[in-house]
Image 1 (cartoon, rainbow, N blue to C red):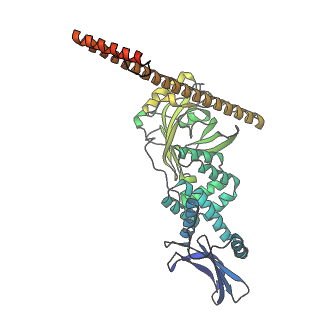
Image 2 (cartoon, rainbow, N blue to C red):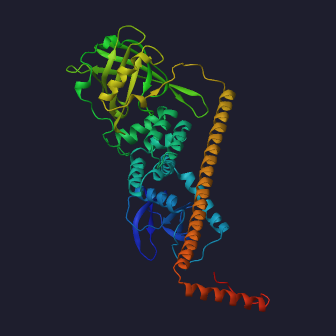
Image 3 (cartoon, helix red, strand yellow):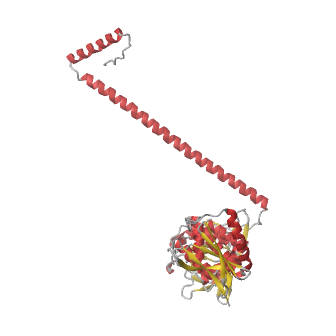
Length: 488
């Protein structure tokens, strides 16, 4: 029976350590009669020639700690990304030339690739994806845990993600969010732009099923409101028909363009067909849509629950804090909401639904009072654009982006000019202040001299005059060759 070959991990100056997995199959009755060893930048390559016609190759990598096979591979990737170098395995051995290493590795790589199964290739792809996706965005310990979990539990989903252009673009987009103040919001925008079934499949495994990615905790930003501030009566049947979101609180979830939602009642539930537009960097947009079902709280008509969802097990709770439905253009429903899912507990926001595509000004005072009841300032809400026009041609969009870039550059230059002018004014004031202080000091010295002379007696003044005259005569005698400072 064939058994998987295992190489041995060595540390410098130590004997055998933990086993690490290598490619290739070695039968139990094979005998090794020749071996060849090379050292290259801390990696020990061991070529074993058996009595059979094929060679088997092992790569022995230094390790200072006992890890499982998956953890060891993940740690090696972490060290490569973080340190970008290897420590020397032996200081007494000659470092081979590049051509020697290439000649040694070429048959190894060819042989290994021939023997690798599809599952082994998937493992390597998953390893690379794990290192790229996880390690830059987390601490070393958390990254190692997440990476190990992904390689062990979600290897196939991770490999599919990297092989899919949209999912791979999502991964690249996520890297731009690392260590930003709005990191979570940035990650959500990446998901909005590159959402597809492959991304959903990966998230379902990594976040929901295997919980490789830890959940973001509730920080209390959107607390549950007191039931006293909710509407006392709300008939979900009156909410049927088409409604626009014309104002929203949370820019991450609420302020999209062309938010046209159509509601209807089914079996005592409020069913909403929601659609909105996601702007693209080139000035275009994607149209997204989803279906949501709400159950009304039997004791509090102003509360609607959207639970029991499969994707990320998300739950949204709606709180109707104000409404007016009279079949008129200024009808509105003001919804404050909070939610949770496997990735984030405690997100939330608030939206205003209106029959009109533009927020009626007549209802703003009512909305301001209702927002204040839940600790929000309606003046900070964002008006949405529900014109829902066609997507402009690409050339026109690019021209608009260029103009926006030019305007941004002009604003930045103007801001720099203002800052330079302020700095010049500050320097001028500093110089002026210094000059004024010098003048004041000179005046004080002059005043001191006058006060000194004023206090002299007649005899002292006569003596001072004689000294001045003597000095003048001496100076005249020597033809001003001798600089004598006159006394005043």
